[in-house]
Length: 494
Image 1 (tube, rainbow, N blue to C red):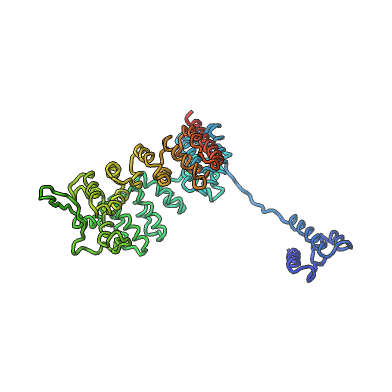
Image 2 (cartoon, one colour; image 1 turned 120 degrees about the horizontal axis):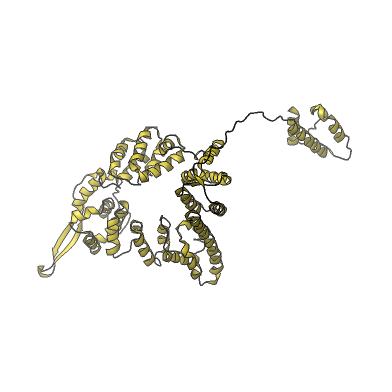
């Protein structure tokens, strides 16, 4: 349509430089064009705009719609039962609050009951799935056959399918493959590793690194051979990540090398005290005159950046970080309680205690975590996640006033609900820090708050008048979220 190009060109260069003539317009517009041009009360700009409006409408009505036959098969019948009306309404209310953790909570209960959502909610839920990859498996399950059918009309929704885990691993998108790998690693670590080994030659360096970062889940000695084979990789990042993982496996060659050197570095020293009548037992930390310096190629640094710890002590410190705590029971021939006591009483040993704590967390040694909590003179908060839930609760509440933010950080990483007492402590602290812990904080962690904690909210109102109104609004919001959580439980348990 050349006439429309003429109009666009005129609009760009201005009517002072160019006018649209009647000859440039379609003959079908002759009558209205004549009326516009003969209007003496309009200036050239007004006439141009009127011509453009007429030409635009002519252009739009002159377009013929694309003729294409579309054959759509009806959605298959659902194999699962639909959720109840109450559950469906609760889901709508949750969607309006935009709380992803609360949505996950609802989906988990729906999936456990082997139910599906009502059809009208499907588009909204599938849309959420495109932005929240970790919910895709749950959403696909709760959307049922109709969701799978509907996903055929939108490529972004193709996660809603009945593909097996292995099929998703082989043909899924990068995000889908990461999700299924992570989930499989939790329940069948050997299978997940075998999948990765099969596709390893086809993966690029960034993808390889990304999957290795997911490998710590259930890492074991079965992974050693695969990780050792990565020493020939071209990518430096891949090799470094493989070494980092090997340092988490007690039976790996790297960890054994560290332990062999530690056997020469740390020993029991007995000294006679006053008149030789009393024998004093202490620890000796000293590097041997010569040792295999290949350890410095595995991430051990030679120089200390702290004035309080020498270079020699720093090397030993790093070795202790990378040795499983059970090593000390054999090396020092003492039980964990005595080993901890020896470290605490020794001047150099005190410097090494944080390294010992780091080793406990690195190797996820729950037994040593409990011993350390019971016998350490200092409270090390990093050990809390390794304790049983009841112990986590006890220590979190005991030391909450001293380490509130750290304890809240670990509490939000839990999968189990908080106790009412811990919830109350968190309420009190967050009420006094409304900018750090706002409504968004509770939106993200509402799944951890028990329904019975509602009764504690009013008791946590801060004494400061300027904070009361903010906490009142926040607590009302918490009540709304907890209510939706309670409704979800009732809807699927009735």
